[in-house]
Length: 507
Ligand code: BES
Ligand code: ZN
Ligand code: ZN
Image (cartoon, rainbow, N blue to C red; front, top):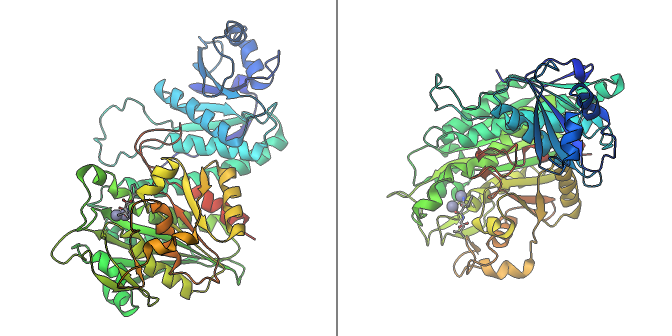
């Protein structure tokens, strides 16, 4: 059982824990103020003198650890820099808190207390700070250890207890709500992380189906429809099934539906790319390019993470979740470069590279989404290496013709602290995917603008009248190194928190 963070009303000075984390604003003024000042007084001015000697200045991403030697009921006080008040955001607090939790872990702490860092002089609101700290705790404390020996003494044991301490009761109340939201968002993110991190031999399409079944079973207002190969064939999903053809694992088309408690005419469709392993198929990837390709179902994982939280989030609209899941493998039955397949919406695709398989499966999933006639369609996919070249490892590529949808999404991403950036669906590049023999080809005529030609390809399978947005998470879905304190190596759950925020705010 994963430990949830809690909020308690009380004085930080009397708190019992292994480690106490407090924030330090760079330009907080002569007096330290808040929790920092109270703690400094008990520690006989030790923090103030560390500041005077410039050991710590509250600079962003810095940390100072002080032993209390029995002067408090915590063993260590960890002072994390918050940077200047002007640059302070909830996301900065999330990262600073994550750093604090990491230091606490390295001190082998099992219980950690902290305060609403930045909600005093930093003037951030208690709800978002409590949410940020709760997310930082659960996401920093996350570990994928399914395949590790259990008796092995871990170098960094997990923190079992995290408490946010606040003196003022009104702040406590909003902090409690923020803590609950943060726990919900982080746990949904962890659902996605676990799915991505599992070995691809175990995370088969059937396993993704099982995971969807579990979510539907747990939530009374979520139902699941499954199409197997035969049923998918009947629906005309030839593009999806072409990608599945090379593998011995059975493909599945998953359709989750969340129905709000109060009936609503509004509906939104989330589509997740669900390639459980992308070898490239006959257009085989080089060995290095394959090493992280268990992450190619991260879009599906994000969708499932979101669905795991919908019962609690209760958005006021119908939400559909679509996943066309299969494995992309080379074999005697695999689809070939040169093949032409007819997608569910009648559009024919010339397959010139079997490694551009995600868009081929999404062609059918988006056609199916269009038939549902929703108010919006959002697909989320580890679609192109080109997007990683364009935006780097940390940023989600956003492509849409709908300014309103883009604006809402970027606003939600700002709140959650996830980095999203818009790329153009430049119609001038449509000619790059014109096929000589079919309606469209699945790669551009050259590699330039590869993220954009992929987006333009997807657009051909959505009705122009339905607002649609494509999210390319090829970079941020899988962290090959720990670039943020609360993002450890492996599956990140990219997009889960932002999509939940978007659904929460959606009117
Ligand atoms: N799954 C990959 C994209 C990817 C790359 C995801 C790196 C995560 C990290 C996708 O199916 C793919 O192979 N795309 C090709 C497209 C090319 C053949 C046009 C690519 O990006 O090289
Ligand atoms: Zn591929
Ligand atoms: Zn792929």
